[in-house]
Every structure is written in C-alpha cells, then in structure tokens.
Image 1: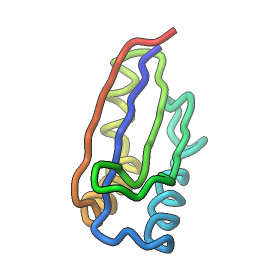
Image 2: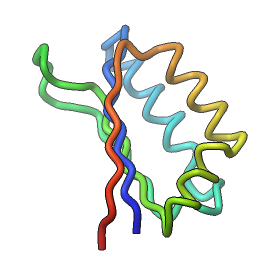
Image 3: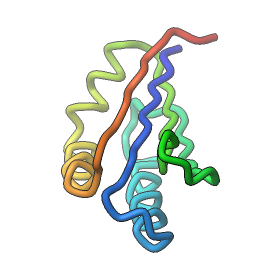
Image 4: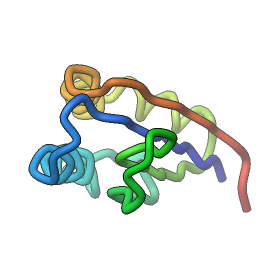
Length: 96
C-alpha cells in the first residue's frame, strides 16, 4: 500500500476558503478507481508553522498513484488547489 500525504497552506485562510478547498478535494472520493482511501482534514492550529489542510490518500501501488495523478478529475482539482495555495508539502511512503 502507498500512502500519499499533501499539506496545503492557503493564501486565504478564512473558514469559507478552507471548507471550499476541503469539499473540492473530497469530491474525488469514489470517482477515481485507483484511489482506495481519502481523508481531508482542516487544521485546528493556526500558527505560522502549521498548514491549513491535510490530504491523506492510499493506493495499492506506485503505478496506481501515478494513474491517480494523471486522472482528469485529479488534474482539475490540482489546478484549483494550485491557484489558491501559498505552499505545499508532499510525502509518499509504503505502508501496511
């Protein structure tokens, strides 16, 4: 199993903006075959070091992760997120 985590810091950190981004990310649920699990959390710590949104996704293989990353729906979601994010961090790792 591959776990893919993305942390987002948004330009607009209002609750409305955070909820919109969360809903757009969750809109991928059950719509991309390779995506086995998705969680989206809105951060509760509003410090300078904290990120605003955490996306946690799981895939059967690296091949499935790559297919997800090239899926048209994911590309559409990524385009939106890139337009509203200030910074992001990504980590992928093998999990059980």
